[in-house]
Image (tube, rainbow, N blue to C red; front, side):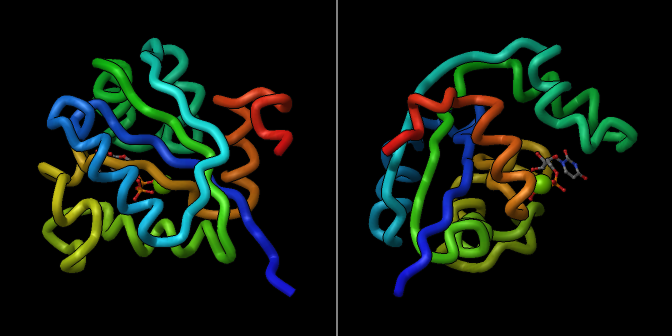
Length: 141
Ligand code: UDP
Ligand code: MG
């Protein structure tokens, strides 16, 4: 029996600015991800700090949260078998210089900071991140 898993992704402000929304969503669908929920919005610096709280002690925290609150983003809830690991694979490495050919970051990222896309890295972070941006009724499919 197939076990479906949910993950959370953000098309970051740099990718929205580059008109990459359509291409990235096409990659999700071509790679077997079901779009459960989607919305475009802007977040405040404070909201970005809360979302990335796990990185609060990292040197890039201030710059990352400035970036993530600098313009519109698109947030999506995705579902497929093995969704969390498969999305990480489709995204490519955090640093696009190390991203594999055919990945979203290889195609769209500018550098290790402006790297086009966020994806949850584990089941617990997926749960937190989905609930940060989506209410229960938006995901009750
Ligand atoms: N980041 C950065 N400098 C770094 C590492 C990460 O600006 O040296 C940013 C980048 O936008 C990255 C985000 O912080 O996507 C979160 O970092 P993480 O290590 O969780 O990478 P990811 O899970 O996004 O691949
Ligand atoms: Mg991460």
